[in-house]
Image (tube, rainbow, N blue to C red; front, side):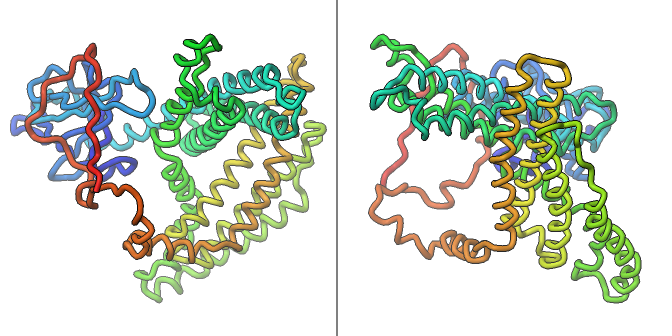
Length: 477
């Protein structure tokens, strides 16, 4: 799947690879380069996103890797995922038959984003499997390892970790299953749920593997081959940690997921009242829009408060009903805070990323609470033997999450975001570069670090059976 480029990551609208139709209309000619193509060194077919240099429309093509001009320039190797056949690929005057166009011209970006949804559904499920493994290891190790006269799992510090890990794994599975079931509903737009599940589950999975490393101690940090060589169970926590870290980056980084969901949150307000906060819109048009905007917000905003008078009680959920009532109240409060941010920040709202990220975090936590309660209720309704434990697990998770949600709401308007942004800009400008003195030094300039496309003349395709090349040392100042 050839989408990413050296200078284009989560912003595919900026891609530079071009596809120009020939005069006879029988072919497209591709030129450009792609980075981090999974299976790129072994694939026979590629799905390539490219831009028409005249219309700037992005289209998707099936490209055969044995076509003249298709070159694998490099096999990429990573911190984890050591077996991944990942490639940098270059296209030089590659003639692609017109029938290899996927869908219609100009629909490539939609195809790319739809494909990303699939990845954003697979990752939440994958990390649930990892979470279960880490929970099992942590539980058994906490029972096997003794310190100060008793199993370490009986010490409060470790017991609390185990409780949080177990309830989080329960919630992760609930979030993943809910997102998958919504994806199976015909005509349902899952972009938000897929993004929320991907972002929330991968962040929680990273926390769980980190806690597993802490509980395992030195044996977590030691490689499994070393453990086996000295006769201990070869459990590779350090390898799992290396492999897991990428989940917060690919298929859309956590930051990009936040921005996407934040944009969706304010879209309706921009649609309704965008003309009032847009400095480019003349005053006459703003005055003309006032009655319509005023009527919308009078009914919508007051309606949020009015619904609180007749809010559902969720009695059928038994002891978990209180958590759904909290979710319902918090959801209405969240909607109001989104509106308040538009009033306070106006056109600058989209640049208040720390504020928007907190809004998204609140939404994600409420989503996880809803999923957890629903899953526990489904197990209870099905008469499953683990139903009582599931209710207890969901209750524990929701109690802890409610504290997080309240803290996030408080931080919306009581924070040091402005000062932190000013400090960050000062660091970026080099005003605090004196702090870097006394270290070894990177020996590289900003220009040295700029992403660069592969050279026009590619090297031969790498042999998958060969050992990885020796690392190149970074020069030290």
